[in-house]
Length: 312
Picture 1 (cartoon, rainbow, N blue to C red):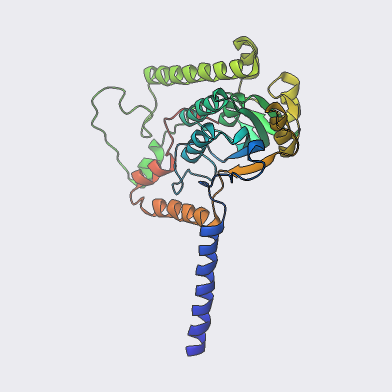
Picture 2: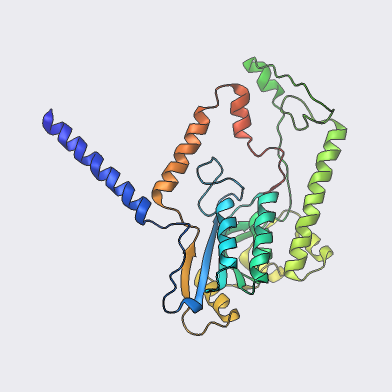
């Protein structure tokens, strides 16, 4: 029994030491590039991965390289004189319109500071991911990248029948007729449907403005492409939604060229998090699920972004 305890204790110590090493020595999203030789030839790489939301690390919707973390990183880069260009590596299906818009505006400020910003599309850069790409100087995509999906949607569900089956009887006390709009216990009224559709339409028009400005197209030209359909990178090139086809390193080379960097650029990664932080983020999601103790709480957790204009 004593030997067994020593073995278990030893394995636990190794596990703790491994996690500590990952935490302290793994990639750090707050790390700044060294100011050694070649610092004036630096291309910063910022990764946008997963759903774009304002959630911070450790919440259900947060993913490495998304949301608030990127916003803070872009603000740092804007004021860093050692950074000559930025490559925005996008692998995202989109997210909320507000989060995409906020990141897009911060990208515009990075460009206004005199830095070149090039988008590099990975497997997917759709909807909100494309919104961000459209705010860059150039867009480089793989031939098989999935992109486009320019549009806006709001999801809602009518769960009346489910509520009846589980014996859940919701009620609401409200200050106005539309305060419980998108409630899951009833159908939308015609007036409510018109309100929600107007909200979607307004957000869609703002999306069209971003693409038209970024791609130097008329709004009518963008509208013909922005019916929600997706494109491969090669198709997007043919219709003018991307500038060229290439890999991540092709995008880095293009950014260096546009920034006037001679020779091999120094690449500095931003937006990475350690394995331990990823684990803690997953634990946070599990903890939040465990706290949903009533049917209403559980349904509210499942539909955490219901009612927010989404860029699918």
